[in-house]
Length: 292
Image 1 (cartoon, rainbow, N blue to C red):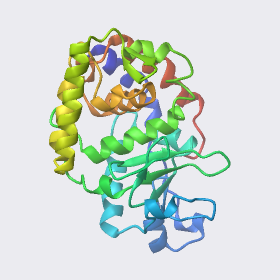
Image 2 (cartoon, one colour):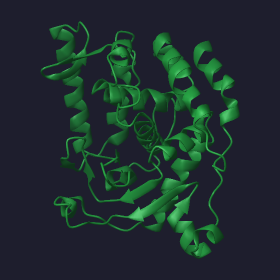
Image 3 (cartoon, helix red, strand yellow):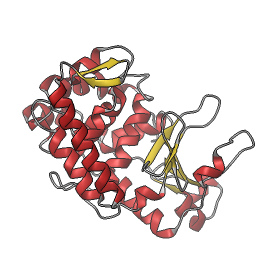
């Protein structure tokens, strides 16, 4: 626990909240600005362009007031955490400042999916944004059983860390170092745990199927907590089942839980905490932009 506490304390200087942009600065009315911008994030309704052939499948839509309020709650929750303001600043610097509303989300491989809660996109030649879907808002008020954080806060913070990592291009997948630290190796069938036995893989498969069954019944809390119990076991030592998908997903999950779970050091390996303390968080200070 000391390791996790130590890096939070040593970086307290980074935690000044981002200043919200005023209506006068934006050139729009105060009423419009309250809906369009919050804590440095711009909320845009989903849009289509001629070249986007899958746009109609995503179902671009406008924001509802209760959705805006729900998202404000998640943003404020992140900002009140140790390092939260620094994470927000750094994620916005790397393209996470725009939040776009769509009915369905897009997987990393481009597949349109109803199970996506949110997704950070950084298309070449276009603006980066975080896609916010119906699935995200279905989880309002639901919590992690172990640490009691709101699931919506975890989802949002996860995407901020994807932006910081640029989907693996900055930290998690530039080489094999991070994958090795968290115990993952790439095979012809994708990412898997290092030296995992067939019986252990079968257990993981069974847990994943159980989670899918719970999700089909919209039992989101039970599904999430089932994965948490499995992944935080000592032989896995990760925050969630999602972290087993790839180093990039693990990076986002670990980053989020370093802020959200006071007991994170009871299941993460010390060297993983050291990686974030020594390699990731110090870059925030170097990149700090005056006025944010």
